[in-house]
Image (cartoon, rainbow, N blue to C red):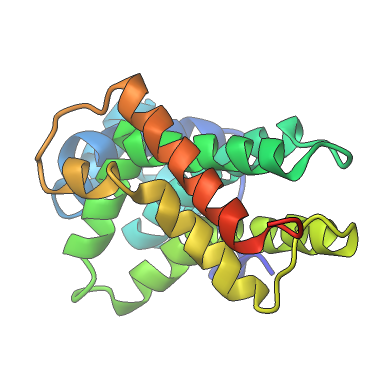
Length: 208
């Protein structure tokens, strides 16, 4: 079910133009400070056009988040082939998760959702469904395939998928969110990726 569409969003000729303008403004100003006037100016459309597509700013923000998370997830899925070794699949998944965490968009979206959580209680849940929830569902699907193929032994797929996603954050997420590092070097990122895959395989590999 497309939550966004169900809540009244309508598409039109300038829909993508509006989304790109909104993405730039949200990234620059955050959610609270972003105004529809600024978004309209950045997108090169009228306020009436924006309101014709999106009844309110929260839905516009969620659609920006949904599109970016969907793009990131599909990019990872496109690299995964059904017959590749499980370690290769996990490495690709870890690279995409870590890349999103390290991206300006990922960090900014996380801060906005956390900061606006009290004012918009449903914002965090819907952002989770579009981002981490979508990644979780894809991971569960692939993990089931590898269990059926005899490469992994997993009883609780939801727990295993959550554990893997959390392992990918080790040494990356908190440093960025708490301002302990402005950037994460490729070497540190690869360290987290290898560690996540190694630990997951040590726990769930059928031959371990």
